[in-house]
Length: 91
Image 1 (cartoon, rainbow, N blue to C red):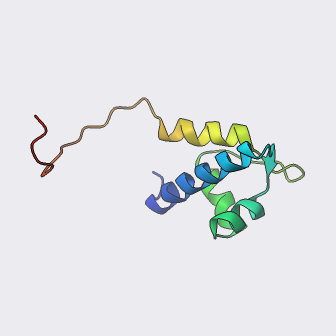
Image 2 (image 1 turned 90 degrees about the vertical axis):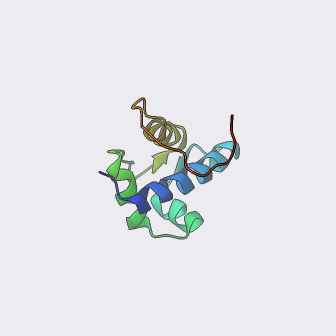
Image 3 (image 1 turned 45 degrees about the vertical axis):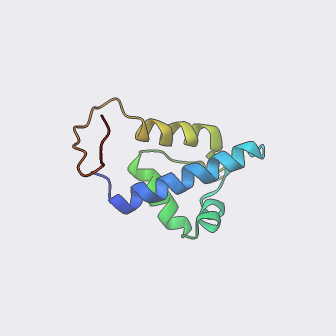
């Protein structure tokens, strides 16, 4: 099971990575992602290892593949049951 704080940071990384992709960046290093997100490079690497994604020490992480990996994590095909309480009259 992935820690809740890691999930929150992954959402931040995803947003930052999409911006980097729009700026035509192909690769990003953990220290760059850490600087943009306000964390540490070690924390970024640990967070990405939770998804079993690793980079290359020479080239860093491929931005497009990392976005795909994070998207796949958030867009799981597993269904989740939920109950909505106190949202007013929706019918």
